[in-house]
Amino acid sequence: MALRQALGWSDGEVMRPESKTCSRLMRHTAGIFSVGGALASWVLCRLHYGPRITVPRSLRWASCGAICTSLASASLVRLLSPECEPQNIAAYDRPEHKPA
Image 1: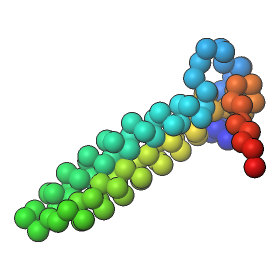
Image 2 (image 1 turned 135 degrees about the horizontal axis):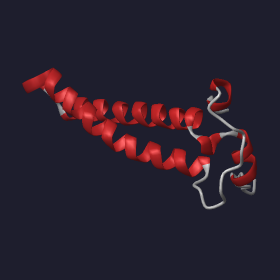
Image 3 (image 1 turned 180 degrees about the vertical axis):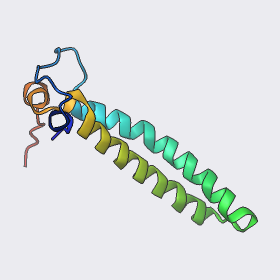
């Protein structure tokens, strides 16, 4: 649930139909930040280990950075975005029904 209502930032209105849905916004944000997190963590790994760097070590740092930043950014979008308020999710985010 979004924190916007608890913080008093929400007026409770339903957004326009052409706006991005919450799930799409979270997916796009997480994808973009995962690339940036991987690059930033790789650079930090290179700075930290210097000439002792190995390929598995740098890949491990990059993957951890990508996962951490994508989760953090998707969580912040979910908590603070007006698209992720309950009334907008109920109106526009249709859960995908997959056959069992």
